[in-house]
Amino acid sequence: AGGGVTLITSTDVSAVSAITFTGFNSSSYRGYFWILSNVTTAVDNKEFYMKTSTDGGSSYDASGYAWLCRHDTDAATTSLDASTSDSQIKISGANTPQGSASDENFSGQINMFSPDLTHFTRLNWHCSGQEDNGVMHHFYGAGERQYAADVDAVEFSWETGGNFAAQGNISFYGITRS
Image (cartoon, rainbow, N blue to C red; front, side, top):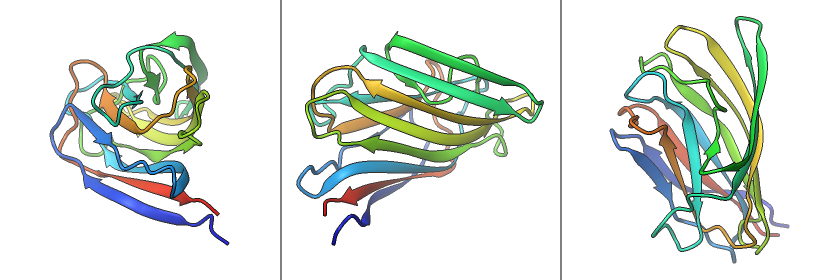
């Protein structure tokens, strides 16, 4: 038995620079995922980022991330962005900024696997969003924290200079141990 899903917390997004999640519990959960529903940047042309913490969210690691992100658009273009050494995981990839109008929102699912183990923590995602020029993007990618340490908190933010608009919701789920 086991292996079910538990809602840990659900956050209605307010006008803040970052949203953090610290409800990690390695005795109860073997993995986590976040559902982003209609979140929006308050400023046009911002990319969506994720950072991790190993100290319960007192600080967030500013290096040691690798990621790749493929995005397809409704303008029939496809591209791949990647980095083997970055200061955050770029969920929306590089050079694919989001718009700030209420209908230019960002939605999707981000999955994290076994963050309690002292190895590289891996994640993947599947999201969609819209630029301020009206082009819709479909993002899917993978990333990792490249240090052999547990991860016990995450931070979502927009590129420097971009805050969240007071719109949308992010729900944080745990995958229970069997």
